[in-house]
Image 1: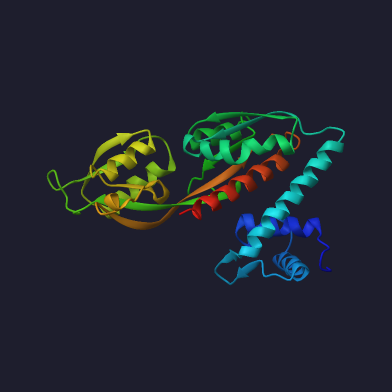
Image 2: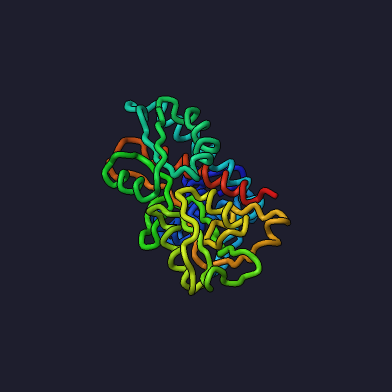
Length: 293
């Protein structure tokens, strides 16, 4: 590939690698061999004479030049979608039903939906907030077209979005109180975080009691930050001001919340293109948030 001549198929491969986080996952998604994907990435790097990805056996990292390339690549691919849809005999149109947990609704509303109309002008989105497990059942029953949800540990499907790092946060000093039992805060709804909290509580506080229950994550975080109880919470939800950090012992855990974009198998025309658009917007937004001070 000569400098200045970019193949949209190669750009799609590159974007898929960046968004999936590995050559293997991208190859599976694109139905290509891993060596074919690697060769296309090399062709792209040769064309622009820039190192776009840093790769080893354990990880893949997008370079600063690669981040710029991803933004431009997705812009070109969105333009292609727009052109194809504009001249299609049956353009993507009508209602698209999107489910999202309340905690992730701000990301959808600020980073994705405002730009949807520019790419799919005939699409009308409707949004429903609910728990991830309820949203998954609605996806399976074709009651929703797309859903942002937290993946259960025994399920591996949907388009990857981002991961939430988890920490076990407990008040200092770390001493059992109230008869030797450590007070625990529990997100008391049917969700992955609740299951993880109950499991990890046995490791971090063998003697514990549920002292605070809430269906709202912000309430659990507030109870922890104010020293009322310990709990498993997303690291990003902690304010970690100096005052709060000095009152808490923060222990990272291996478990993470995996956020995915589930797509209904109902076969509504054009849903794959809309899902790819939403995935890109949400991932770029998540990366910007992670890079914020």
